Length: 247
Image (cartoon, rainbow, N blue to C red; front, side, top):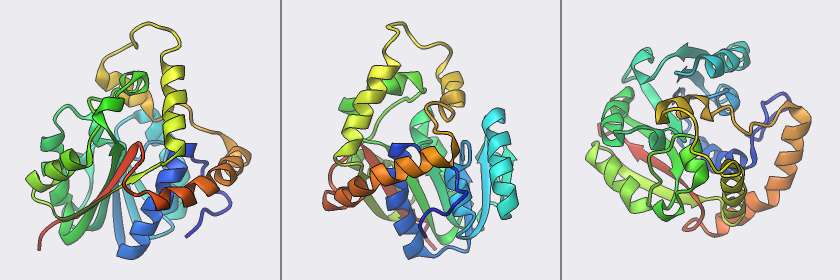
């Protein structure tokens, strides 16, 4: 289940998150996966090796890159949001990584996402943690909020999900990465251009590493911190949640 040669490179925080996500998916062993908002397809390329994979991505530029990366692996990518997902209600696992915080009405989104999962299947999410840490990077990329574990649990329960499990990730390196991103985002001192929706559309293309060499260096650098974060699943600037659609 480790990254293979040819997998698109992941930025450091996504690499930390992938270690958690990969383990959860290995436990669930889904046969079909739907990813909502797959961005450039870096995670999608990995998921497409694990199950029959479908994704939706609303940003046209990101969609084009994701399709080129995922189609050769047998996966399908559609240009649009969750309403363009084929065969709703039949997926063993529906994923949305760093998507929910971009949506003005997160409760309505979850209420529409959960029915995409087959009864008894799983919804797997990641979001930035700790509302008090909302900073320049969150504004730049169009975030509406960050979540506490209790807030995310409540949102999922209100949408009808059960058997909710939430862990933090990114301790301790993620705090440094957040600080660097906030400093980079706030370097100009001016308000970011565009609406929250426009900033969301381009957010998945920011600070993305290019090339296998960059990906390999990041993977090696992150490896010890990926092990460390397992020591403190109650701390870290990111949250991963897995929940069940009732039978």
